[in-house]
Image (cartoon, rainbow, N blue to C red; front, side):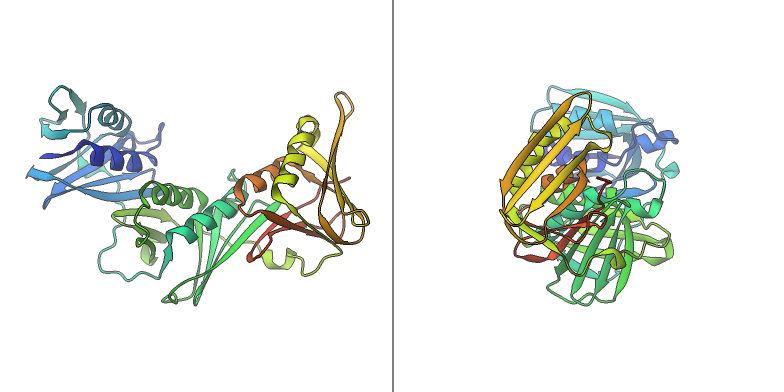
Length: 375
């Protein structure tokens, strides 16, 4: 195998495929990236056995072949050299990467031992979604997915596809986010998918890094015989297993009405949270109390810790309904503020023991629920 390519292109795609390489894999070959040079292209593949990335770069291929090379060291080397022509050659199981003034050799592992990562050829996409919509959905819901494997289904994002509508839902048992989007074209079939949150986060990263061409959209394919999904963006395919299991019946916990509603500036709410969190971060569960006073259109956030002290912060909002006190985790509120756009938020609740509902004013397609804490 022997090929030449541009350093900037090589580095860009190495950085993308290296992201799913596990630093401490059970199999040594998973430290590596699979290279296959043929027909004027070099295909790059990486996987951690749950998520895989397939991509290719244009290159001057002098001789075809395939091999696997250590991902971390190779990408660091290529990122460190000047933007110029890079020559890559394989000789006796050693890969040499060189420029005019730089040279490195890497030990390899034969490509035959590399796990197979699904590829898409003539399959038809189920749907396409715009860059903007994909990034918005992932940012608004991914943070609500579970980060541990106690309940594997909660580490995924449920994608409900029906006609021209697609909903992204994530929950960890104490909070839930749901974003519904309208597709430009109807999906080829209705289907529900449970995708690991990490796969969607990697997809969002790739789109953010490469999404300069607004005409590019993301295509979604399902490889049913392997229980996998493929997201294609430009010349990058992100392949992920689908999570098996029954997703909780979340619709029944979404309140259909409210007794108290607050419309307030997101910045005011967020700034008040930062003040109260000075004490709340010392409280078990990061508990803060929201005191809603519709008579004066005032919201008070407070926190108290017997060994530290107490504090409070007040801001105004447009309110209706009954006065109410309710407690939430300051961490959960902070996560929400950090991931939501929009100038104003709508907060609705019915009782101090029922979920608090957060919406973005003017956007009926997003909802976030947080379970309350005991007062």
